Image (cartoon, rainbow, N blue to C red; front, side, top):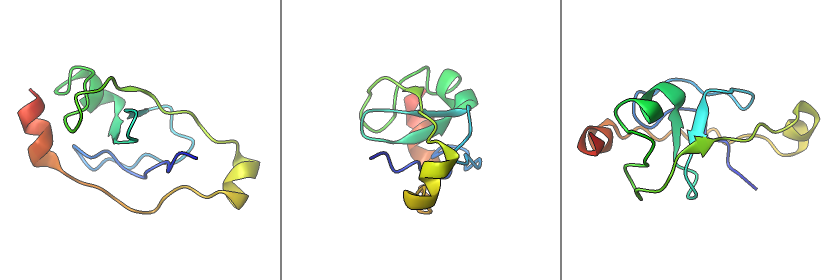
Length: 82
């Protein structure tokens, strides 16, 4: 099950579970659409994998399977991606 991390690792922007702006790689690294298409050029700075739209979990499932509250913020890694 995806963690649905709560923020962009580059800019720390909030990305709630229902956000259509969240992008992830196959390791669930999470970025906002702006950072993904901008400085990251569609590639995860951690694994160099493709960034794709993060699926949204239905609200009724969020009650039983809540999103992660762990925030990861690594702006230095995002600068290396450029």
